[in-house]
Every structure is written in C-alpha cells, then in structure tokens.
Image (cartoon, rainbow, N blue to C red; front, side, top):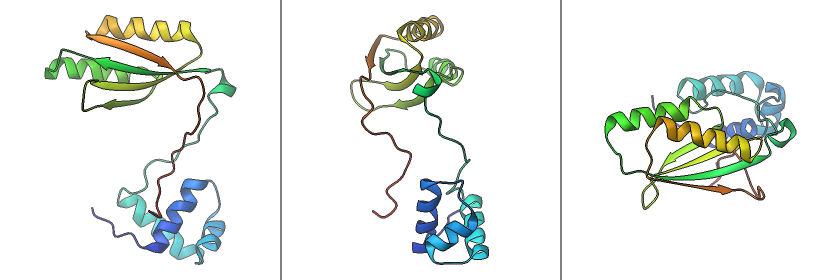
Length: 155
C-alpha cells in the first residue's frame, strides 16, 4: 500500500521518532492539530507500513554490554544454501544488532554488541563453526560518537 505523506504527517513522524511514548495530546499540540486527526493519521501511517513496531532503546553500557565490534566478512561462498545458513546464524545470535550485505571488497558488515572481548571470541568461534567464511576482520569501537534511529524527515 502506498501512503501519501504531507507536512503534518512529517511533523507527526518527527515527534514519534523523538519520543514515541508521548501522549496523543502532546503530539497534537506539537504539530498544531487535535487528538482525533492525529490518531487517524498515525493509524494510516501504521497501516501503510510507514510506522513499524514500537520499542524502547536501552543503554547497552548500563546493562554491561561494553564492547561494540564491527565485523567485516569476506566469503568465497555465494550459493543459496550457504546464504541461508549464514543468515540463519546471524538471526539466531542476539549479539548481532545489525547486518548488511555490501557492494565492494567486503561482503558483509555486522554490528556486534557484547560484554567484552571474551564474549566476542565466543560469538566468533560459534559463527565460524556454523558457516565457512574466507576472512573475518573485527574492529573494536573505541568510542561511539553518534548513534541515532532518527530519519532526516525535513530533508
């Protein structure tokens, strides 16, 4: 379903991105509307697939997940069966926060969040025991400079 998004919808989406827990009254006030039209627009955006699931963003370090690794994977395997096994291995591991298939020299990049280097090694050993990879390079993030889920809606 294709959804037409106007300026009011963009304002509503910006408010929801900023804080989805705020009340309909607060969102309506922020976008210069009333509660019922805002609710109808949010419902339309959900039904149209513009708004997905709602969740809470947790502080990884506060919960003891102090190590963030970016894992670069090169593979010489590109058959459908290998890809199925690889994707299953990634989906089965909660440590993998993001996974992307890339164009260029690197085939995949993963964002892996773990408690420490030992936990990363356990993740790595489990992954390579399940799927054959040509080369794995792990880069430890020393400092998170920017992390956001916000899309630039006013662009």
